[in-house]
Each structure stands twice: as structure tokens, then as C-alpha cells.
Image 1: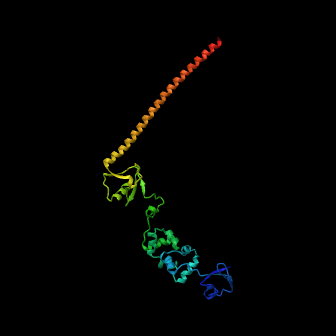
Image 2 (image 1 turned 90 degrees about the horizontal axis):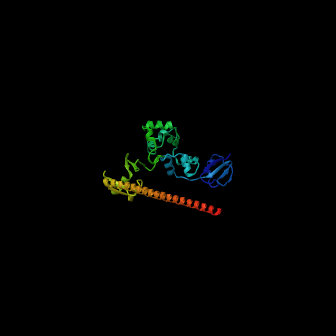
Image 3 (image 1 turned 45 degrees about the vertical axis):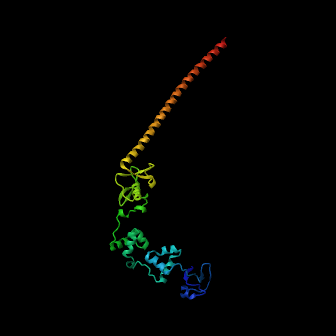
Length: 283
């Protein structure tokens, strides 16, 4: 079985720096493609992948685990543990959790980052019950089911922050109160709040097209006439189309009757011609 250790420099130049040499395990060796094999011990040259300040920031300030740091730098987590020991950074231990699992840390993870007790426990290496009990000791109130539910952009049901009402207009929620999107866009464009008798009209008739160039402010009475005119215009156009269809249908019926009459005349003419032909044959 080959044991893997790490040294600061190659053993040919500084063999005393190797832990394997200090332990008396290095007997003989030769070069390999990735390291040096010494009497069943694979010795690798030192890999400086992270500085002390960076490691302290990730491990102490950001509370990242050894595996997370190792995944970021594409190294083994044992190598990260070795750096903690070399740099003199105290490792987090379950026995001394009261020293580093502070109230500020739990508030940051639970309240600011909105992590659950399960996610915090998985991140720090504790059970969900232990994290919950720690929050209770610090006076951090648990979120209710309503507050724990994801809302806004974080919600999987997020549709852009608006809904459509029965009239077909988009409705936003501003400070917990519903507001029409087209009125809000016009108010932001004008720089003042519209009065109740000032309506925002969609020029092309599309209530979902809230581009500023498609909106105009009209008085309530003018807006009502405009909407009524559009409805009357549509009704008049429909009535004209129905009338034209009925007229064309009547013309087709008249032509059909005329064709039927002509067909009857042709049948009578053919019958007379047949009778005359029979008479000629007899004589």
C-alpha cells in the first residue's frame, strides 16, 4: 500500500523538510510522473494554492467548509486542513462550537441569507435540532410558515411581479397595495400622480402593451366616448358585413332559381326533339 505525503521541496534538494524523512520512513526513491516514490510512500512537492489571508477569509469570515474550499481550488480537503495547521488558523471543532458559532453568524445565515435550520446544520456539520436549539438560546425567533415561504423573485411561481385582472389590465403590487401598471408608467413619465378623472388610454387598443408611446392621458368623459366609439365602430362594421353577406346570398339564390328555370326549358326542348325524331323514323 502506497502512502501519500507532501514536502516543501524535492527530496534531492531538501530531504530534511519531508515529514516522511523525519519519521524515518524514506529509504530509497526514484522520480515518478507526479511525485517521488520512497519505500512505499508517494511524496509530492508542495502546492501553494492559497495564501493565509485568503484561507482565513474563506474559513473564518465566510464560514466555508474544508470541502467547499477544496472544490474551489481543485485540491483535496486534507490539503486544506494541512494549510490550516501550517498557517496557525484554529480549526472549528464541535467541542468548542460556543466560541465560533456566534449569534451574529446564525443571524447572518438564518435571517439575511434565509437559510433553513437544515441547510445551516449541513453547512456547519451539526444536526437540525442543534442549530434550532442554538437559535433559541440566542433569542432568534423561528420564521413562521408564511414567512418561510419563498416570495418575489425567489419564488418558483414568480411571473414578473404582476397579474392580470378581469378587465385585462396588468396589476402590480407596490408597498403591498395593487396598482395598474399603465398608470404607474405614465406617472413615472410625467413626474406626478394622476387624478382620478385622468385615465390612461391604450392607443392601439392592446391593454397589455404598456409602452409609453402607446399610452396617452385622457379625461374620463373623453376616454368613455373613445371607448364607446371603438365599440360602436366595431358593431357598425359587423352589421355592414352581415348586410353584405345577406345581399350576396340573395343574389346567389336568384341566380340559382334562374338556372333551374333554364334547365327545365332545356329538358322540354330535348323531349320535343326526341318526339319529332321518332315521327320521322315511322314515315
